[in-house]
Image (cartoon, rainbow, N blue to C red):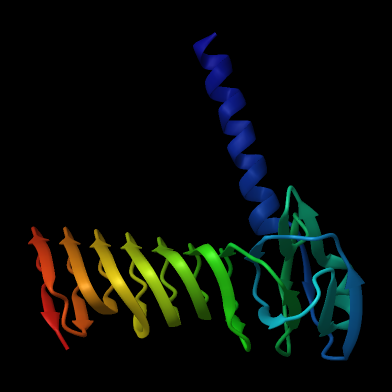
Length: 239
C-alpha cells in the first residue's frame, strides 16, 4: 500500500512538472492588436503573468488589451467571487516579443494581488476603507492609494511602491523584495521583516518595527512613539 501511494505521488508530481516545463510553447508574433473585453463587477484584482496592467479610474467591467494577435486566445480574464483574474491559460508557456498591456478600470477595489513577472500600476488614486497590496512574484506594484487601513505584503522578489495617505499602515516582508512607502503618509506604521528586503515608511505618530532577517527599516517623519526589536542583522533608523 505504501509503495502504491509513493508511485501515485510520483506520477502526480511528474505530470505537474511535465505540464509546467514541457507544455505547449507559444511565442508572440509581434503583430499587436487591441481588444475590448467585457467582464463582471469586481472588488479585487489578481494578476499572474508576464504582462503589464494599468489601473485607471472608471466604470468597471470593460478591459482593454493590447497584445500579440496570436496570444489573445491564451489570455484569461474572468471574474470569480468578486475577484478579477488576469492570467495565461494553463499548460501553455508564453514568450512575448513586445510589452503586453491590460488596462483595467476601477471604482471600488480593496485588493491588488500580483504573482507574475509583469508590473501593475495606477494612473489614478485608489480610494478605499481597507486596502491590501500583495506581491508574491518578481514583478512590481506601483500604487497610489488613500485608505483608512493599508496592508502590504511581499513574499517574492519584486517591489511595492506606495504613495498617498493612510491611517494605519502594515508592511510585511518575508522575501527579498522592497516596500517603498516614503510617499505614503501614515499615522501609524507596523513594519516586519523576516527576509532580506527593506522597508521605507513615512509615519507621524506610532512606529512598530520588527526585524528577524537581514533587511532594514527606514522611516521619515517624527513618530511620537516607537517600539522596535531587532533579532537579525538588519537595523531600524530614520532617513
